[in-house]
Length: 110
Image (tube, rainbow, N blue to C red; front, side, top):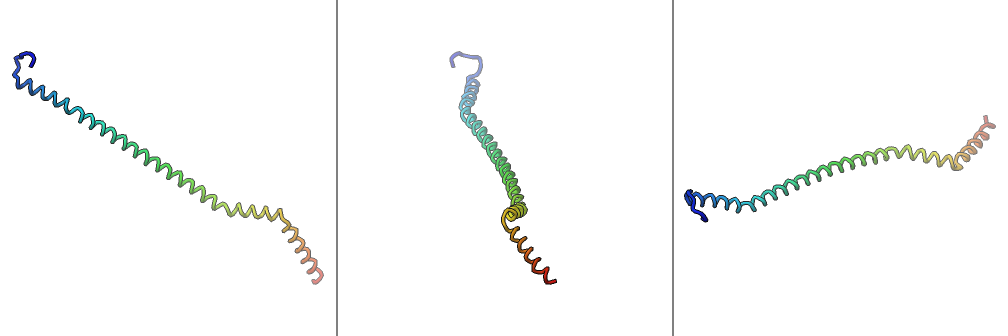
């Protein structure tokens, strides 16, 4: 001790040792706080990843539904396309000529 004090030396030694213990524990406490902060950040990271996976699953389901709707509408679109192609070809003229020939051949037989 630097100066003589009216306090017992054992008491000052105990207080000094307690202060040294606090200073000695400071790095461990700092690392504990660092690990706790890191754990919390990692937890938030996993929460965000789970939320993103859920949102992507919803988007994938919506895309699948749209695909199924398009698949179910293929029949009507195919029918319209086939009708348009037949209308633009010479099949109607051939059918009309065949019908006229059949009418002409059966009209004389009555």
